[in-house]
Image (tube, rainbow, N blue to C red; front, side):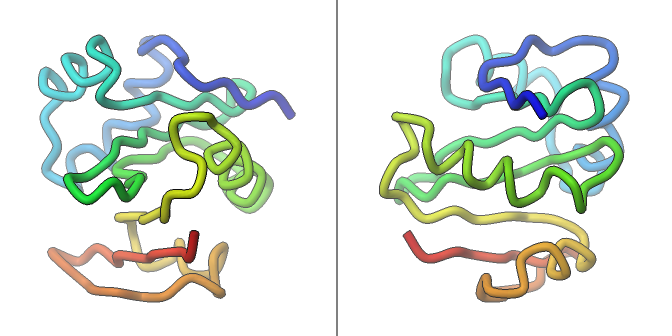
Length: 124
């Protein structure tokens, strides 16, 4: 499995991420600006999945959108890759996602539910 940080925003990435972007109420133009400026990072797992992270105002790294196939296969490896990224080391991670993400991260704390989305947070 190859996990790439800073992947380009391809047609395939947009197609995979679009449902999550819509559910989360995220704007594609804003995301593109954040990716271009380095304020967000697009991760690619082989050619099966994409995930967007960005730091919040408190420095927590948030996974705001994910899409693709075979999440059970890549959810934990991408967590390890995100934690190993130099810009993310030592920071807490937060996932905004559908309730089903809890099955991949049962040890993470459910810190809230907003707009039908579960908010999960890890320790450092």
